[in-house]
Length: 288
Image (cartoon, rainbow, N blue to C red):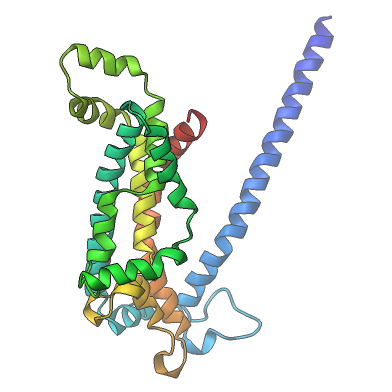
């Protein structure tokens, strides 16, 4: 009996070992496939102009050209474009955090006739393709004389985002209502409950919203392309397109250098905030 039990335990250990080997092997294989474009981008960025289109392609450049980064970053006023992009990104991030969290708190906690219908209407706006509203929105901002300013890119963020409202409402719903009742007994107002209790408890969800917002607006290409005309007001995503046609052809090695520098803030943000990002996704996804 004892021998049979030990054999059964050994069999379970072998199954767990094979399962772990399979899982880690799959993850390593998928990671390699995902990292191949990044490795190729870095390889191209460090090549000489004559090596970019060599066939068969070479992964390791014969001469590592670190000077390509200097050429790429001085070809255009990247400092100005970096400032413009950072201004737009952090302003929209602040606006979406403030407005979406307040609206989501109202949908999660306040009771009133038509609340669910209004929430359904907010969610329905996510079903409308952005291409449908692009022209009417442009006409409105044109009439307001907001074209070629940062206003069309920043101010709409202070009216909330349907996706972020949904995400934060799902998180608020996981917090017991008894906490609100206890705070009300102590004389706390709705705004006090929101600012003193809800916001500290929803840090993972707010971090997820902040990361999503940062990545979307930092890499946004279409909206700045529509509303910004002046060269000194352009953003980094549009500046990358200026490498197309440089010297009569696309300077791929310089374009890869600039792309690496532009992508670096998003990579660093995800690297340092991935704990909150994953925690927020898991909680809002499983308990919503």
